Length: 233
Image (tube, rainbow, N blue to C red):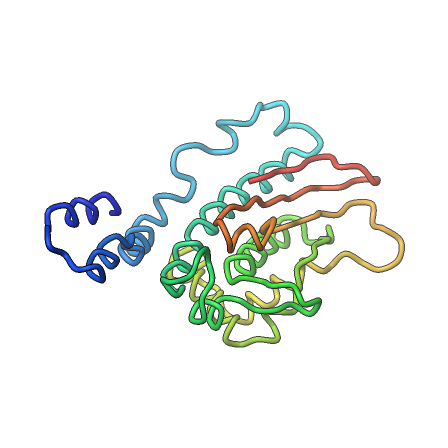
């Protein structure tokens, strides 16, 4: 899309500065529309976990956990790439990175500890927590995310839900279900550490994500005080 717009710019001598600026902008709405149409084809497109992970690992002590974690991480990367497009579309074009008044009002919130949470971060947290609840409901999760944020903010809950349903990520999601899934990220108990627990970071770091659209996500399973598997996207 960028290349096409640049070729239009070259083919139009005498274009004004404002027209040139507009033509040089990537057509993010078209990219989002295309992503929406292709969403189901993108998910799990060519390879499965069984295709890329040695069979002895999948048959080992943590095979089920590894399969679920890897499948979830593939979805996380897809969702965060879609999220950057949404945030780019909403931002003020005069700013750098993923910033701007319109973007912040819709897609950014301050957590209880004062840190920022973006809508894509809240969405991937809810998504991964749903997968862990579906498959391992008795294993708690340790995370720095504010699991109650979506419950406290109806508008933010609606934004996360619309993201899930618009791109067919979780077509049946509701603000209530999104809020319940999100709470699970703070299920790590006070007191004596549990024998097994997950450690999850949806976006590391939020600053790099917003300033440069760079990020990583991590999901790790701990047992007896040691990491037994971890996945990074």
